[in-house]
Amino acid sequence: MHATVAILTFHRPEQVCETVRLVHAQAAAAPPWCEVDVLVVDNDPAASGKEAVEALGLAGVRCVVEPVPGISAGRNRALEEASAAGRDLLLFIDDDGTPVSGWLEGMLERWRETGAAAVAGWVDTRYPTRPSPWILAGGFFERSRFPDGSERPAAACGNLLLDLHQLGDLRFSTALGLSGGEDTLLTRTLVARGGRIVFARDAVVVDHVATERVTRRWVLARQLSHGNTSGLLDLHFGTGPLARVRVLAGGAGRVAVGLTRAGWGALRRDLRTDARGWRLAARGAGMTLAGLGLSWNEYARSPRPLSRLVRAPRSLAPGSFRREEGTR
View 1 (cartoon, helix red, strand yellow):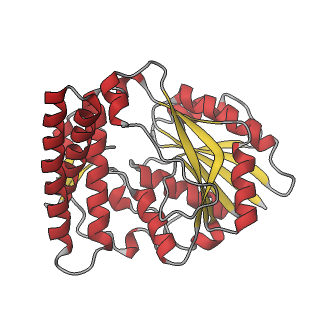
View 2 (cartoon, helix red, strand yellow):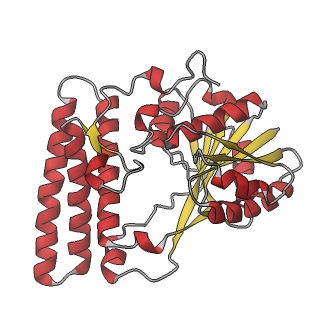
View 3 (tube, one colour):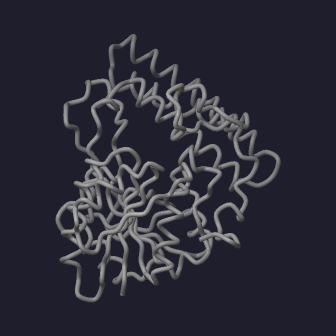
């Protein structure tokens, strides 16, 4: 068997180099039944990441530049590169993720045991500096650790293995390239087609949260983005004219309940109720924007938050996430 570990990066040469070193060391010690290489996809047209990675001089590591902006373009480039090289498996890990000892072997062995279309590992959260009590109380960076071997309805690409043969013609939707949620759409579609996603509890990648992200403004904006993506996907998978009404009502209801909880928490000086109320309200606001036909482009390369609010794609039609004629 042949597998590729793909690492997407943009303007983070030092971080991606550290992740490449760690992944390369595990690839060299991969199980004897699977040959593993490492692919870095640099989404910076100036190739800042490519230059840094190539300077490492590591065998079995290569880097390509994907000039089209957006996380979907980078992920699709990784898929096309792996497919063109005849790989059987493709693993995704973020450029700021730290794979713990045994991560790669755990992901590969879980796939070998189950024959699943995808394997999702756990992403643990660590903080370089301790966040404020409000952020800890809100659980903004908490991720669920599901039972080992359990099946999941969808998965994120921060720690994910894909069986390329079972994936077939599925590709990441370019309509979600700047907003996020492209991984949820692809994996939900994979499950809808009969594929299985199994959870590997002990195949762990550590997410070191950057200090600039541990602020109220950042975490609430991230919740708004997640709610917006959730609403857009509900519209895509929903049926009938009431789908938009359900998204709008669900979003508005969450805003109302969240603000009520936040106010009650503030009055009682209950940090947990206050923070989780704001978290729910921000997520509801994102859903409401989706119901109104608006998309929050979290990955837009603009410093102005309001410029990230654009008209949502009318449809996440199958053609937007299948391989199209003429692509690489």
